[in-house]
Length: 463
RNA sequence: GAGUGUGUAGCUCAGUUGGUUAGAGCACCAGAUUGUGGUUCUGGGGGUCGUGGGUUCGAAACCCAUCACGCUCCCCA
Image (cartoon, rainbow, N blue to C red; front, side, top):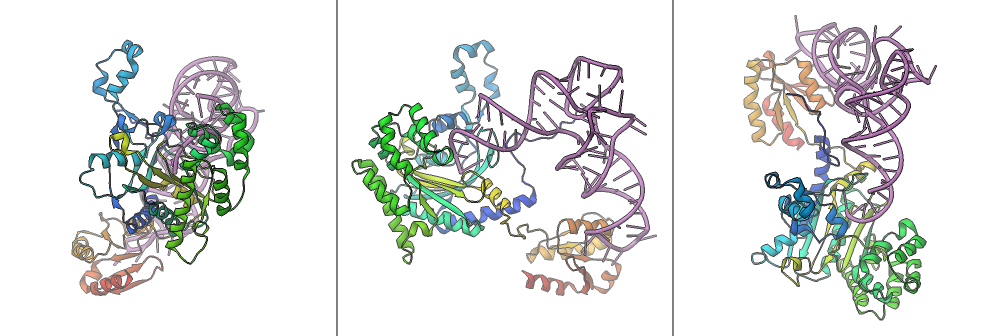
């Protein structure tokens, strides 16, 4: 058999033990916060029926779905069949796809289990998702999302708590310099209404979203390309140019949107959310600022299912896409036949959090919890002497192992060193006759003779 | 979809206007040291130079094609 050159599919990665230790540090932190806020765990399959996923992410999103081919079905068709009815055949031979995010599978789960669930239902979900996008910095084809969503309530406490969770998590991870950007799709709809371009929110969003990247002039050009009238752009201009604090923006928007019902609703939601944040921490009188939150009128987000609040988090000082995002969706379950269930949620991108933390060197040094104690293995007799002690270690919760071969001591010490095992117990003939074992501290290099009791005692005080 | 860069040892890379047998560091194995790692010294194994073709007396290098991967734009976590 010819040896294959080992390689990974584009945009995927292995996570070596050192990497996993750091990833787990992030994951555990997030999981703890989610649980503190009353979210329950959920997992769903990697693959979903294709129809479950399509039409939820906008045109771009659908293109990025990884389809799963059913090789068996493939054989039923000839090449010439594809010219005639290619789409129909693809539908048959690839009726499943890898999940694109965790929110849509969650909505599918909620609808399927509506009679068993207690609403409002709060769940968190930490699993990989797949997107057939071309990879680049901070962008992978397989990556983990950590979602927390609430469905079955329109309460703006949920929005406020999302801000609290993001704020707490990032601070706990050591990422201090970040901005939580918020906006509301109803405000965007109101703006579209004022421009007499109702129904063109998506085009408006896509263009307006780029304001901080390409500037006002190019945004206006793009709007014209997308079919907006010149006078509509005149209407929009003061908004694009507006600078000011969160409070200033709200005041300005109230003025700007005073004849738009939906727009006013959006502002009211932002204001109420702010009030709730205020009540969470009565001492501060600028709750948005206190939680590093900024109302950003240009924030739009691509996913098409959002209808209310939208969030996006940017780590400052690092060139990286958003590390978290989310929003409220009023009718996601409606596409599965369960209307009038509002939900709101958000997601952390673990892989981007990791990249940010790596770049800013924020990981604690001791994330890798390895073996605490290694037993050397000179020969069969020493091995037999050590095994019951090793058993004892595990009973007592000490992470321990024995070198599995009777190798040269140098090799065994090298193993302990490479694996950063802090203590080694050497057992030779002297030790076995005296029952005084040699304990070596690998950090200092010091050795001492100790009874097994003393060694166990030492570890219980260490942990 | 558009642009751009990189493919040489297990890993990170060097390789002169095209010229003998393609190098270094790390890693691995052995020895200096028969019971001691992280420092040192000595020796050793390991390469279809991404793949295919072309130019040439001669190609890792130049040309063409192709594949793979990275980065930027679009979009996103």
